[in-house]
Image 1 (cartoon, rainbow, N blue to C red):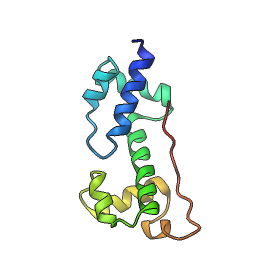
Image 2: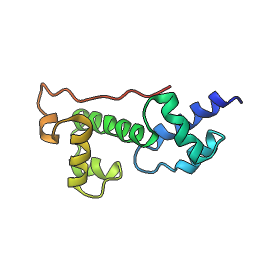
Image 3: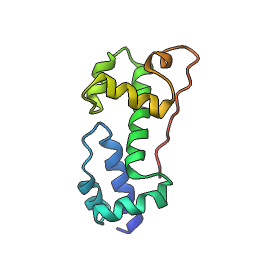
Length: 117
């Protein structure tokens, strides 16, 4: 397996662990490098840091869950690893530029961050 395939496998692992269960050491093991190397290499490939990528991708999924289901906000927040509604709300606003209540309005346009390849 070449390095690019290892990185793609690591990215698949990251995508499957956006719920707050991501283990950077495990992602690095899958990528066949150290956690330090993965964190240094990731911005060169994705043009965004690994931590920011995880935050933005998780908030993209959060927005899809909020707008596509009738789940309670607290249930979604807990699923993505947020321990308080306040922290969840702040993170949502930071990524999407709007409050949770604004996101429920019909014309709301949330910022979606696509998966990197």
